[in-house]
Length: 96
Image (cartoon, rainbow, N blue to C red; front, side):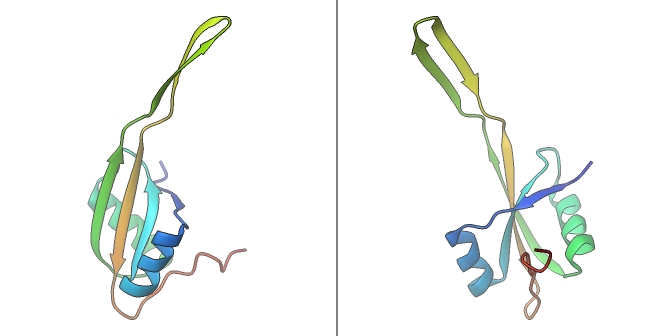
């Protein structure tokens, strides 16, 4: 089971990483804060000070079409905001 799914690279997440040493990841919905901390430390070789998590519920949509109602939903997701020690950094672009 992979705990870290992918990093989130948006304007807001990049501003947090440059100013406050916080990095944002999509993580497995069943992972807890301790597992996330250990996964980030093992993957990137940094010291994690704090982990914050956010659970997002699935979005449900209904479309009215010629053939009738089309119902659907997205998957539930979980984000983790990880604060690392002062003076350390994670480079997401080194593997490109």
